[in-house]
Length: 320
Image (cartoon, rainbow, N blue to C red; front, side):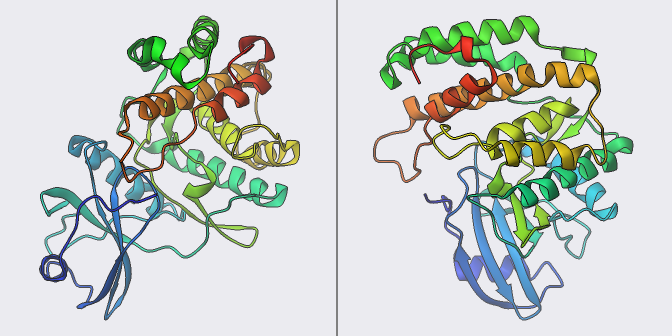
């Protein structure tokens, strides 16, 4: 997996850093993680930072919302990486023809196989994040929200069956069922991360050291954020093995800040099914439209179809 799409020369980076009070460039190394942006680990004479250049999937008009959210969470003491301001107080710059930010570096490692204790801490961190945004005023529509799923399904069309026989019918049935049951405005809404996979949580032992990659953050159903997390953390990479201890840990940690109501519990599998459809469809689109010689490794959409079977076994019969 390669996450450096835009090359930045040492000379251009040195000139960029001169806008800040961060010292002089010592080294810079591309980070081969993530698929949305170009990322560099930058060491200067005064510390370590992350340089992010935003590629086409992140709209420049959305950056002020993301930066404001990170600043808000940072001010509330949450372990997030805000952008560094230059000498003129600006966070969003331009470098190599791309919007760019210099971002605070956070220590920690992303987990491949979280334990129930680590899931408990991560769920509690999400609850703390939701608590902290209670007074966050800016809003942003979910660019991958429930309203986008049917149009994306239709754009994929019968090509879904090229991924697995019967996938078009399976996902179509699941989509219509979930849309018919979606709780909409019946549940609390607020700023959510919307993509808090294990690789977006930095851990030091059993403690959360950082919540990162807020580039799908938006205003949506609060408990949907937990459902996305549950679907991402509670299964193996292929979506076959379910770890109830991890799933229960996430919910228990979250409930330290937001005990789930009876209605939220009743809606949870619908929200999680929606999360599975969202990621199955976005992965399917990328699978069908990524050139064979591309440097980015495609993610298997069937891993989320299999997860969907856990939350609603009647929705998927053949393709997974």
